[in-house]
Image (cartoon, rainbow, N blue to C red; front, side, top):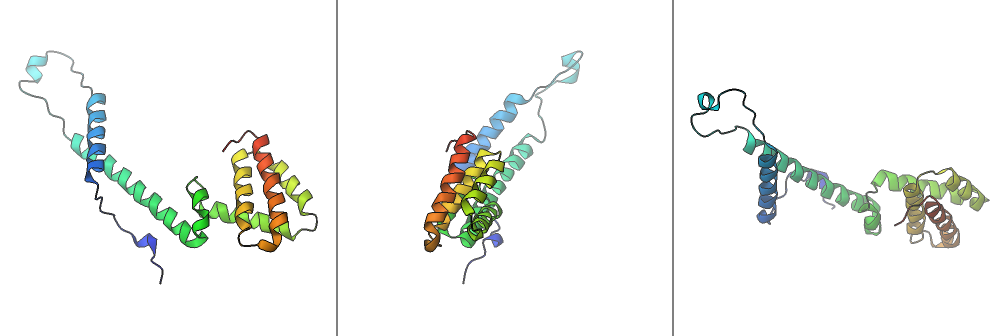
Length: 173
């Protein structure tokens, strides 16, 4: 039985030194950016030390937000690995979502169904104006070689077409 990663509530941070250093850095930023302007005679307004409420609460909220984002990113990567397999981890870590990867693989599958797949692949590649998109389409074709051994030559040609297009558009990986 597979574990459902979306049910992860909150992870205990065993390296509390990291979270404390984040809090310390946030606190330092808040302190350095905090300014108070007083018009008039300062002695009448302030007779003792000045304390600002909410500073610690702000630092706490920001650090909670950072921890929440970190947990969400980890959860997304784990779920994508669950559905796409471990072979896609490299692309996933490069900000490629499961939906985008699935879409690229779908497009490549559609190209394989065509009789003149090279011409169609070239047309599709020429319509792409984003080098990153062309690169990920090439990577999807390359990944599919592992699951579709009989189409290896066609997949590698599709890979080359899209990789060349990504380089034409100036995308460097």
